[in-house]
Amino acid sequence: MKVSIVIPLYNVALYIKDCLESIGGQSFSNGIECVIVDDCGSDNSVEVVQSFIDGYKGNVVFSLIHHNRNRGAAAARNTGIEHA
Image (cartoon, rainbow, N blue to C red; front, top):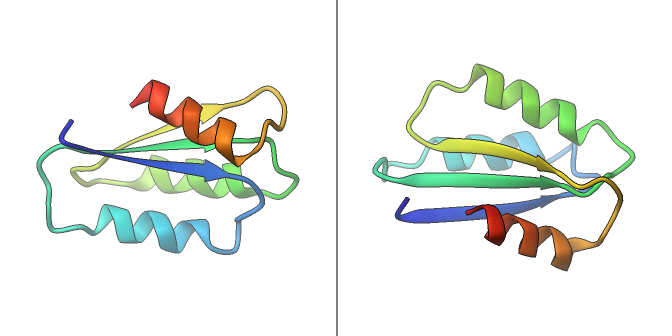
């Protein structure tokens, strides 16, 4: 991959679809990956992300990683970097 985007996911159900659509709609189409790290929020962010990924038909490679408990934004970013 040439570009890796890491998104910590915690209680952002109202905004995450717009974010993912923006990433998915980029004109740069050679080597973008988006690593989304679920940090165990209490809303339906994970379901919104999974629904988006399931229906996405573009060039960006999306992946969803799950923490087993809330560890904070910094830990979520570090997990994303490890998986990038």
